[in-house]
Length: 361
Image (tube, rainbow, N blue to C red):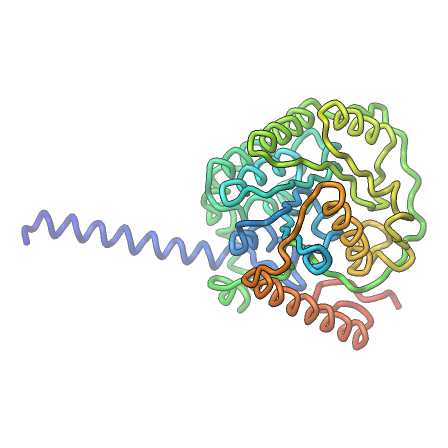
């Protein structure tokens, strides 16, 4: 072997070793999410292990990933679904997550929660990271990052997180090491379960706004979402989840209802349907009405499953052996987690491992 060829091979080997080392270092330093440490941070990345052949994809913020149970939709209607939700997911993030999802599958129905229409500009890096760090690298992720960054953020730090997290040395724990290679999923097809109860009391009165119009950028992305679904032969259903707070103004609701009617889309405001669904905010919420607990999510999902079957025409997959076996395993894990949370509540009085706060003495 010539000296020149040997030098080239040595150089290539050195570059590969450096790349592997930097990759491992990046995995070590990136934040690890899970019980007791922002469980919502696992949601976006979880999807890629489950991608493909869902009847329904939910897109949106905490009002989808804490309020709908895909297990209930399966058990009662045989409908397969996944929730691509994340904390304070802005509408452009929802659009690019939908675009990303359609690289892997084409569902019959996409359900979008409209609460994020209130935000017309990027909000914070912390929420951006929860929405974007878990996305696989693609054109959709790049566009989502560019649309979401605040002025202080660096584009390259989303592509190479080591640039953002290089100073986490002092925070490292054993969990950072084990989490380099395996992160346990905490969700059930994107649903985060909570069995505890805190009744809705003392909901603050809404403050009047000077302007109830949604920003042009929000309408732009809602239009893009509708167009994308139409191009792919997907029915888009707009919803407002039955969360009592933050307040959903009548003026906002009227705008969405009028736009949906103009576009020939279904729009369901579950806030106006709580009695029909059977929700009781003294028992069906874990945080005073912001989100539903497991009991509330199962009630809402049961009603919505009937709607999808009877009004939308989804037929489900009863009798398909492979899917039956797959979803039985999902159901087993779901009920095991429910039992674990109930035991923890009985022992501690709150969900200690979930990061919930202890009741005040």
